[in-house]
Structures are given as structure tokens and as C-alpha cells.
Image (cartoon, rainbow over all chains, first blue to last red):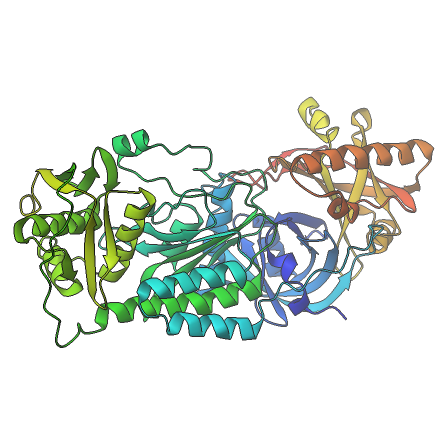
Length: 448
Length: 154
């Protein structure tokens, strides 16, 4: 006997399903469906964008027949169902609306695919359609295994710092979820923008690359706080994939290219939420179709919640009670000069004409270099950085630890002559391959 | 039937057949090719009785059907409703079905579908002809005009 729980691959929205109803005149009506969702063991929900005739028929005669198609094998299942109710709000509606927005954007139909209602049906029977297709080879078990998940959870939880927790989450995304590439993006308060912090599996790291809320799977996941899964990207290429990165372009646009996996057929964006607050997004990609089904989604949600909690905790953990005295170190070799330009209007920062970063991270780096020049020291506590950064942008939420990870990674990816390294808990060290000269607006100028 | 609709129906489009049983329960089947007879206001849809027995039984009993024709590349879709009769498929119809399966497979593979997936939707075993009078034609392309009647004989 077929159960709804066995039909996950029919609910991926890869191959359109079909619904048939009967009109008052006794005439049949058939309509394609972009999305069918499993509600529970006995109910399914259909997205209703505009199928007016179907909706009208169901109000007179609630009998419907639905043809589901397995997105992995192509096998068809006939569903005999009874229309129960229509929902225009609530958790189910929000989930379907977000998924629809993401998949419609993939095919450029977001304007026509506005969700109007979710129609819920009780399933009376499920029946496999006869087929002449060859029997497919047994599908390898795509479920992430629980012991591995427990191990990943422990690795994130016991990481020595937030950077370690992020790395452990990326390890799990690759090994446990079977991603070919993964990245962690942070929310850049107070803007509705996400910034790439760490990534795996891409040709370019992309630390500091931005994604606005509402744009693409990542932006929609952030805006709606829903997991967005697309199992068959098909011919639709990611917007950025074709654009080659170059330093000249970066310096001109002050924009870092978002990494993209060439040939990706599946992706999933998971909001990093803890205590009702959005900290960022975990994004995974794979070169195979339907890589991220319901089970990998559940595992990713567990990892995402834990990582978001770690991000939140890093902001709340008190600074070490007795901070060790900060050593005044003789830095640099006094060798070549490093030309550092900092523009106050967008806090963008360039080293030797190479664009590094803008925004709060740019301001932090300018502060560190400025303080180094003024006081001759190279070790800074997170607490003083937090104070300095927030003084010049009232109302922004910290995320300082995450911003420092991003900044550190960005400097590494640019092979910049100025780098950041950890100097023990709650402290960071500025490493200079030369003598910096801060030109343009000094960090103390600009915004007050 | 206007000429542009006839041209559309001759392309490799996905075909669905909707019917209703005596208890007013709807049924779905797939077509594997069609023959348009514009001068008779008729379209003959080829269906595997082996794969879709309930659909064929409904046509025999109720004598009415709906069929949709949808182009997979851009979702352009039309639904035709009317009276339906049944007849056995001969060699020419079997050849039409074979050509249809070949052409739609090529069109779907161009969109990235694997051969093995498409095979589930293309049975030609025990082929019959559902002859449908074009009484009503509706546009079903996703968008604001979906569901609008655009033609037909009645």
C-alpha cells in the first residue's frame, strides 16, 4: 500500500501535478498544479494561484482526482481526494507562499505566481499508475543518519569559538547533507541585507558578498524565515554564475561577487533563527537533482538553529572578567608602506588600491589600523571594538563576532598585506606586512 | 478552431484527458498524440486503455471529455471540452502515437528531463482513439487570462 509519507519526491514541485474536478454541468475540468504539499498522513494541500474553475467546481462537488508525479523517477500516483477547506493565512500558507515565490523566481514568473489560497484535501486512496517504464535502480538512502547528526551537533556546540562553530556547521553541510558547496551568510543589521561570512566548495570564497532580502532563494529565506528548497534548477542558471570576478570590477563597484556552484541542480536556503531573531542564512548547493528532500531539510534546520543560537550566545557572553594587559608590540618591519584608504560615506576600505570591504566591517578595520598608528599596539579586545563600532552607528545590532570572522576571511581571500588572527579568547591581533598609511577620511571623522 | 490553435496542437505538447464517472468523480489520463480535423471541428486524442482504463470507461459511458494541450517549454496551455466518442486505433494512429512519443521525448529531454522519467507518461499499449468535438476552447496559460473561453463551436 502506498502512503503519503513515501511520496516525498512527488512534493518537490519538479514535475507539474494535475488536478481534475467536475463542474455543475457534469463536465470535467483539468488543471496543472505547480505545487502539491503533504500536510500530514491523510491530507495534502494544493497551491491556488488562479485556477478559478477548479476552485468553483470544488465548492459544488468536493471530489477531486490528483495525478502526482515523482520528480526523481517520473512514476505517477493517482490520488482520490475530497476538498476540505481553503486557507489564506497561517503557517501552511506562509510555507507554500515562500516556496512558490522561490521557484517562480527561478523561471521568471514571480509576478504571475502570487499565492491566493492553499486548498486542503483529505486523501481517500493512493494508487500507482500502470507503467511500461523500466524499473529504476534502487535509490540510495538519502536520509542523513542520526548518529552523524548527533556528532555534528556536538561539534558545533563544543567549538572553542564562533568561527569554529561555523566551520563545524559547514563540515556537516558537506558531509551530512551531501552538499557540493555551502556558505554561511550573516544578517547585516540594520540593513535588510545578508553578507557571506564563510563558504566551502566554491572557486571563490566570496566573504563579504551581499544578498538583499527577498532576492533569490537566500533572500527569500531571510525575508520569509522559511526554508527554501529547489530540487531541479535545470536550465536556469544562477544569476551570478556567468559573471567573472575581477579585482578591477570589485574596486569599481565596491561589490564582492556571490559565489555560485557551476552546474548546480539543487539548492536549499535555511534561515538561521534563534529566539525569534534572524541571524543569517545557511545555503547549500549540489550538482544532483533533488539533493535536499524533507529529511536533509530537517537535519539542516537542526544545524541552523544551533548555529544561530551560538551566534546569539557569542553576543551575550560577557567579556573575560580580568582582561590581560594588552601588550604594546613592535609591529611591522617598518618596510614597504601600505596605502590604506577609508571612505567615510560608505565605510569602504581599500589597501593598495584593492577593494577590501565596506560597511561596519570596513569601519572596524579602519578603527584597528587607526588605533595601531596612534597607540602602537596590535592586540585589541572585542569589547573595545564593539564600543568603537557602535559609537559611530547608533542602533545597529552587533554581530561583532560574526563580522570579525567575515573580515578575517575576506583579508585572507584577498591575500591582503594586513590580516587578523586570533589572540586568545575575546581578543584579536592585527598582522601587518608593512607600514600602513591611512589616507582619506580618518576613522574618527565622518559620521558622529 | 482558429489556425494558430491548430498549429499549436500539431507541436509536441503534453496532452491530458479529463473525464467524469457516473458518480461525478473526475478522472485523469494522458494522451500520446492527436490528430486535428479542423473542418469537422474535432480532435482525435490517442490514449492507452491499458494505462488509463478508468478514463476510457468514462468516455464510453458519459460521452464527454476535456483535454488540455500544454507546451512544456513555456506552459502555454489550452483546454478543449466537448462530446467524446471512442474507436479502435489502427496502424496510422499507432504511427502517430510513435511519432508523438519520439517528438515530445526530444522536447522534454531538451528541457533536462531524463528518458526514463518520460517513459512513465508514454504508454501506447492497447491504443484507442478518443474523438473529441471542439465545443469549447479555454486558455489555461498561467496568468490573469487563465480559464478564459477563447473559442469553440457552441
